[in-house]
Length: 300
Image (tube, rainbow, N blue to C red; front, side, top):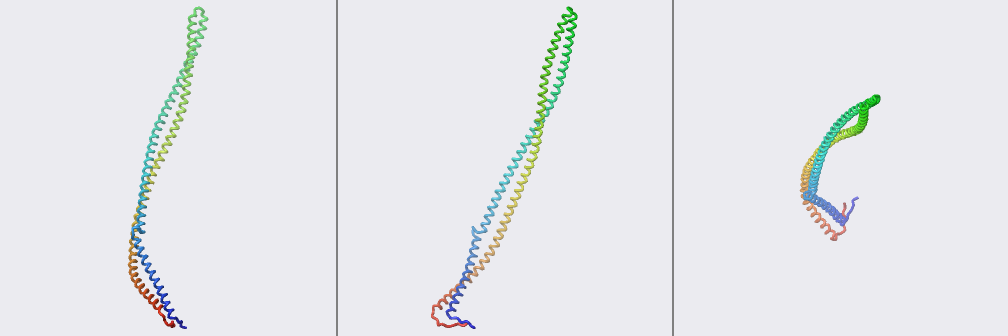
């Protein structure tokens, strides 16, 4: 069955349709405005591409500062390690000289101890001679006593020989005691000097080991500095590539947006014409709606 509409309903439907079309046209017009604003934002001094470019330049400057700082620190570390290596070399040379002097002194002390041992043998011989002389003086005294008055002078000589033998025995003993003390002290000196030589030998070994380790650290420090330079150079190359890619993308996007903006301008003219027509059509419906019209059903 056909549906019937009144003239007023038809007018209202026309007004609603015009309002809907106006809203659509305004939305299209707003989209065109947004495209224009977006294009302005892209090409402005504080646009996104300009901000990206400034950020990349700041990052490049920061990387360059880091590169210089790392390079300077690595150079300073390498120089200090080289100085320490030189000091260890000097110390090692000094230890080697002291150790060699200690060994030579120890050898001389051993020879001196051997000479003292020989001297003690001579003293023992003197003591033996003194003992025999004392025995001879004793026998001479006995013979002088037997001779009576005729052996009186010989007895005096025998007593002097006995006294001289006793003094020789005493002096040789004192000399032997003194030399024995010297020998004991010399043995203690040799023992301590041997211990010092051993300690110096250990120090020399430690100095040699430390020198080798410091040399290795110096080489590693130089390698680390070289690796840091390579990494930072790679970062700089990457930044350059990113900048080039950004510029390429910027140019492509700007071209696309400009094309879109040109289309939007053409579309804006068309939309403006449509808006003018719709406003006139809406005004017509409003004018008709204000006029008294006889009720008349319209068949769909």
